[in-house]
Image (cartoon, rainbow, N blue to C red):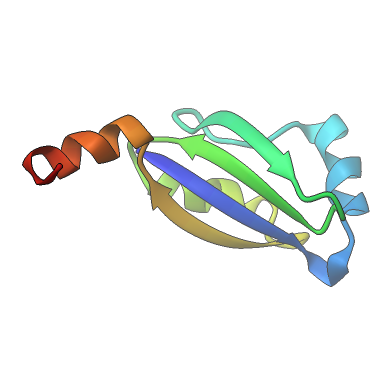
Amino acid sequence: MLYMIIESFKNGDPVPVYRRFPDRGRLAPDGLTYVSSWVTADIAKCYQLMECENRDLLGQWMANWNDLVDFQVVPVITSAQAVERLGSRL
């Protein structure tokens, strides 16, 4: 399953996240895969696409960062999967 993770940096400050990452890495448990990420031009939010079969893995990962980031989790599907689900309605 794919998840779009919307991260808002606490206190609007991305610096602590960018300091921790080089030292400790993504801190993702086995089974949680980073796909890609984008950061808003004002560096206030990060959008990460993550993949896993067990939703609990996201919770474990977010626990490693929740002192620095507020998270919103949105399950997503690909455009191709959306077309497939729409099937005969198209």
